[in-house]
Length: 487
Image 1: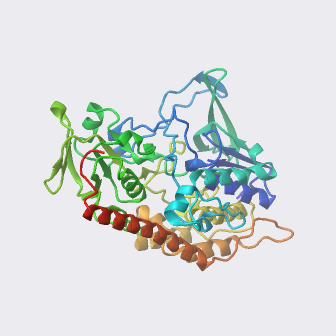
Image 2 (image 1 turned 60 degrees about the vertical axis):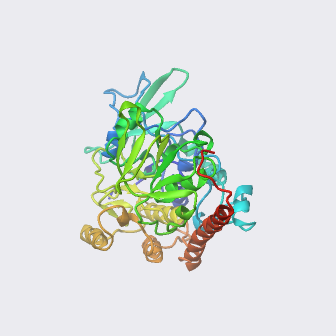
Image 3 (image 1 turned 135 degrees about the vertical axis):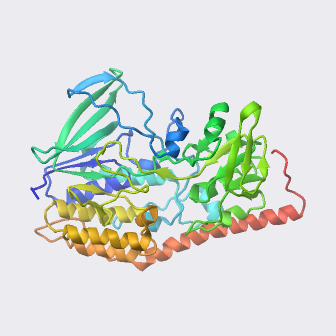
């Protein structure tokens, strides 16, 4: 592999931010450039301004996982063009009182503690020693990684990477870039070449919408009635409204619980009984939440607003359907990199593209100790690009993926490190090796089992919160204080 001197990072969320530090500490690269399409660092922890509202412009494309198409690239760069009007799903899922759902100790990077600044709401829910942190604390924490050592100077904000391609003649990577210029009210396009590319753009951007008969027609007949959890911004618009929340994962349970006492009672929660591996189904045991089976079809003709369920029951006059149904991996800027079963295939250790290890992914894993995973992956990537370690043979990399498919399956579970956190962290750390006086770099500590203990303890605190709330509601109900009327 030719020496790597110029490295591009796509995205400046937690994965991109820690990647900057890991690359910089190697002291081996002449150019480190970060391209972030939002106005600041933070990724999915940025709270959008009020005018930015997540949309579902094409229900059928979202259901088919074909949304977020690449833009057409101008023939001659650099240039200015009319501003693109294509919707790009750039908003986040942050709502005002959103907090982390795992212990801050588990989230933080190994050398940078997350500030112990609990919110009053978190203290009320979990006590003075609450381990959870408000989203603003996390966004500022991510940004602080760039504030030191002048890293902010490496970042181009408000800049979207529209295409990444390998040039055959030079063997370098060309990034085609686009930035909206307010003073011209036009898009400015240009390109830059690099020896390696780190993709840290995340995969919680494009909503997944399940295929439900009549859903697209319902959304068209009643604009705004179908939403994704990405667009949830709090309870106010749902006061007294009849709501159906679809999904039993984190967003579904959080929204259903949040709506209790605000939306019409009961809040209808569509769950299939396959509970979240960390949190189970306790959140849905609240007496003001009614568990529903899967939706069979939705009727909207002739003024109907009816949701029919697979058990033969139905619900009329539905005001809102909120889909907590997850996201679709999209890489519109990498048209030659396939997505298979909602994961990126051919990534050794979830990091290196097997066909060309100078294309690297940071954060191509499911939730669980994620910030720390990004750090470990970034150190490994930095060591490799600095020429200080070698990867196993292509045959060994292929075997790693085949073995993992046999163990986890060829879908999203493939990317889940749970429950084998220690094995993964130690494999990455040992392959990355240690920095030395002559070969500096970021040092990775040995895996600490206390991280898993804190991870699990945080889940139990949330479950305990729901259990306490559920029991209090049952006692109130037995005293005749709960009603099923619109509140």
